[in-house]
Image (cartoon, rainbow, N blue to C red; front, side, top):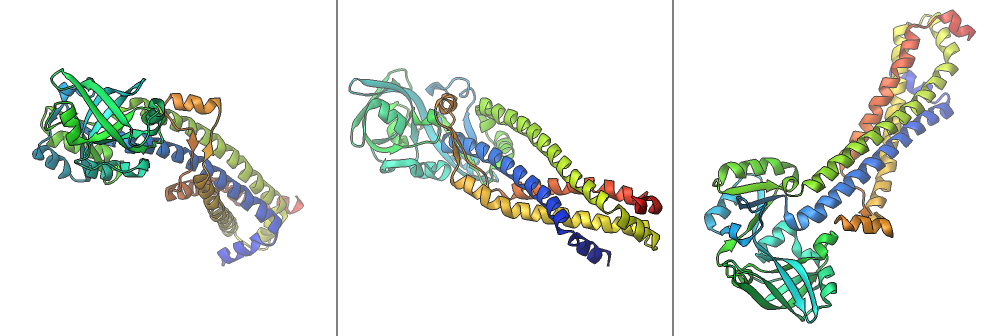
Length: 404
């Protein structure tokens, strides 16, 4: 009965109820929009830099991360690949033979990273085929290369043109090869877009005079959140002369950037919650001031203060919960629009982002946890603030209330 009475009380003064609901509604929308943008930016950054090339986990010969030379490569045996693929939680793994080289066309020369890949497994790990903007994907037996769009522009080369790759082979000899451009790739990360060349693993091993060798095994987990657990499993199962690194360990600058931004965003979100609390509390005070006489008369007529406090609590729960639900419904199309039409930074600020290797684009995330977590946080704030009118009701003096 108290719950039904509380619901009716809300609509005795719809203006007051709508004001309170609107404050909760705005709080949820603002909190969801901010959190979704933060998560969207971080997910986009990780997707650009991690899943596009480095992968979430890499396996090397011990010492390769600190000195990335062919001398730290390892024999690509079936036993090593089976040990990685049999680890629980591993979705796929692909080998690479990586080396730094000079790419040349005519009078244009540019330093680049050359990666020999197994086309089929590389596609499963990094979805490299989806980055092609012109030409065709690699085949195992092909003698063509895939070149990043930014590097192709610097070399002024296109499909079918010949690119000469000059580097140092496994035995210290000069590695030289002529390859036709079979496809052009576009990466979201400007750093990758300006320096990467792919060719089939067999062709790279022949070019570098490193038959049967690889420098890296890139591992893709079934769930990115399990990256640390999978890395620990691989460290325990692989021989001691191998090292297993997560993307956070390979790129600590990006990881620290995300952590710093998360901390600063948490402070901003805390300030937002504080402003939200003042807005909700102001409407509760308004409601309490308007209904002082009503509360005094109810207690004078025989209603117990405990029952009156329960009714006020039900009103607070209903009005806060309704505002949260409407806030979620209103924030879904807003976040979807921000995801489909991400914020793009142009001009000098965009150049600053690109110098650090980040794409100057801010998309939003549609992760369900964002909506529920922020709505739950605002709901808890509303319920905690409702303790004040409940306490005022419990210590109510009927005569003074009716006079007020």
